Image (cartoon, rainbow, N blue to C red):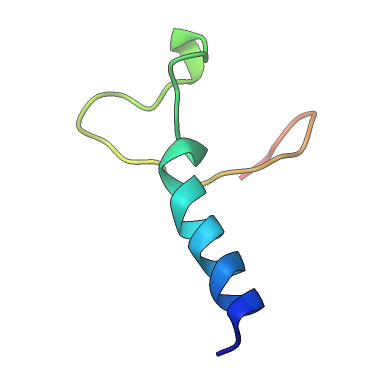
Length: 49
């Protein structure tokens, strides 16, 4: 693995804990305590699942 790939990979793992930060979200969309995030999206609009 070259240095560029290693640096990019390290950046991904360093940012991962912040990806699920929910402190700024309204209570109606936060994941309840004791549960974990199972689906994530960056889209805007309605999501049907």
